[in-house]
Amino acid sequence: MTEVISIVSGKGGTGKTFTAANLSLALQSLGEQVVCLDTDLDSPNLALQLGHTPDNHTIEDYLRGDINELKAVNVHDSGLMFVPSSLHLTDDEVSEESIGRMLDRFSGFADRTIIDAPPGFNRGFYSSLNVSDRILVVTNPEYQAINDVRKIVDEAEDYGTKIEGVVLNKIEGVFEEASKKEIEKATGLKVLKTIPRHREVTKSIHKMDPVVSDPHSKIGHSFRELAADITEKDFKAPWYSPVVRGLRKLKGV
Image 1: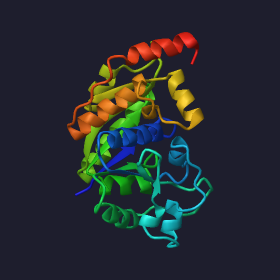
Image 2 (image 1 turned 180 degrees about the vertical axis):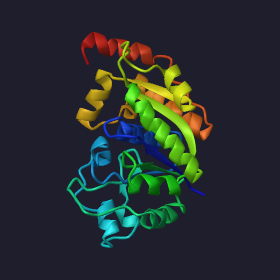
Image 3 (image 1 turned 120 degrees about the vertical axis):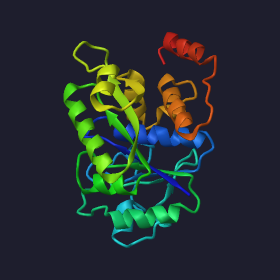
């Protein structure tokens, strides 16, 4: 039976798609067969994060009935399967029924489906809640963002959907930020991973090459550790990775 995990956020710009792409690849690297599904039709970035420009075979093509569920699946160089959303504006909507049919087809071959859900509290968000076994919340260390996480907690409780925890992204380490402890106390959720605002992330997004693709990336290791926790498998970063990163820094790479 395929487990469905939705990556959600209370607003756009938190790093939700960055998390969905890298977590999916990290799960794939642990031997899981994963499908990553982009249901954020208004701001579709999953394909770009994976270095792919979708011209057809998108979720919109499926929603319009032009192709079936399997025809919408694209394959990353790593072997990760993903369903991209079109880069063009569209009036299509992801209904719970349509996403449910797609998930049913994936259940025959995928260990896990990761849904890059639309941000906020719209129809797509609630559809994702209803079809998911658990959700992962991505947020930033802003005090205003805590209220969004609280809303997600309330809605997930109403739908009976388990919240795995929080990925705290874009940390700068300044005084004005909400701390990990403050977020955990205010929301009742565990912060599973903290991701800094770092040049490595900016470079990864610019090059459309996920950090997990780099076997020595410290942030990539964080996503592999998160994947290991989710799957209850083991991951240990290579002991020499800090040496590789140090050499790269000396060379200005």
